[in-house]
Length: 347
Image 1 (cartoon, rainbow, N blue to C red):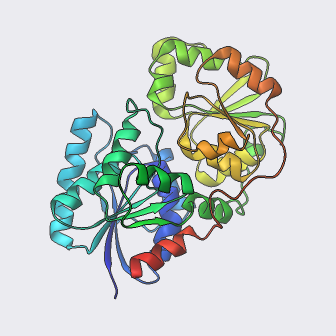
Image 2 (cartoon, rainbow, N blue to C red):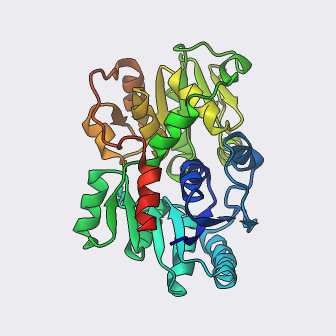
Image 3 (tube, rainbow, N blue to C red):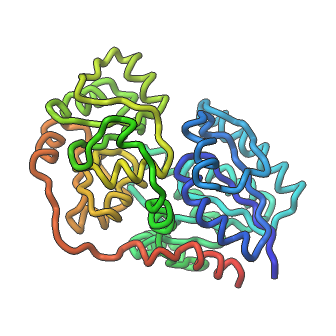
């Protein structure tokens, strides 16, 4: 049976995941793609549709940035109207953003089944907005597509066992597909493969606190660093009055293909991103996670990821001496998660 699936996306990681899942969905079903506009900056949104050839959104709600309550309310209003008008058989959401929860809430209130890609992740830190979003979404979803065995176990501990499917990680599908595309990002930024560290910082726990952000930046002294900076992070560095030393090259946000190229050619990754921790694992790059916890516990347990928070001594020590080696287990599947998701939807 051909389904009408309304897919909700709104942030960078969701564009990446949708790029591979939408392609698979559209081979068998009708998809209505809704962009909430949560990431409204061109570098953070539009460029992903151009470079990765994600299907053009059928609707863009243009919500933009704002307080959590205001932002979710505008998303809920827009998505609810589309569900009523277009009458989908299912609403598909990704990950843990405000767009995720808004899409799931709008659907469940109208008694439309929710399918959640990347279900079951837990940081066990309810101070993180993402943790609240993902937990609530999981508990109202009909189909839960888990990337790892750990995520399946997390759901089981919360009493969620029906509709749970271990499919692997769609980010691995995307990394395999898009790492083949050539780019001149190294040449354009005067970088030499293997001679720089890659830094990404965007989470409020690091950016909103002046001391944390200052600690991270100052811990990088003496190293060649490239820093694709989120627009919000750039504003906060300025408002905090933090001086970025000359060894750190701050560049505009890069598209996904360029991001993969920067990562594959870096010595090490320093990040507070969830997705990039996995990408580092995919490409056997040491990952220094600027957080106190991670949803991707497998990367830590296997010895390829170390948690430092914003502690400058821990960061400097990891840059100096964290050098994992050896075989890596295939925690994240076989690169065919998208096909498995569509097969389950079709059944």
